[in-house]
Image (cartoon, rainbow, N blue to C red; front, side, top):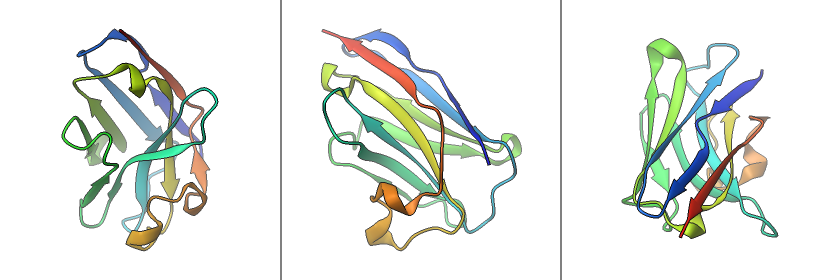
Length: 126
């Protein structure tokens, strides 16, 4: 399974971007797709995730209220709408797929996802 991520770019503080992630095959109803990010010199961190079966979403505290994860089933694509961007949001953003959704406590763990996109760079200028 390959994940094609796109939508990154350069934006000013307060601006918006929308990231997209499309798997190469249809995902199962039990799957979960999420976004992680990695800033220079830092570890990869959880951003947001959606369970396909329920549509339930989870967000990191740092993006809650500013970012929204959503899904277009017809296009088999997951989006991350990022609003009110801050310089500290600058990172490479990775989409990730778990064929079988992890338990809630493990949704934030990068190791619970089997497939990863190539990453898309988001740069927020101050």
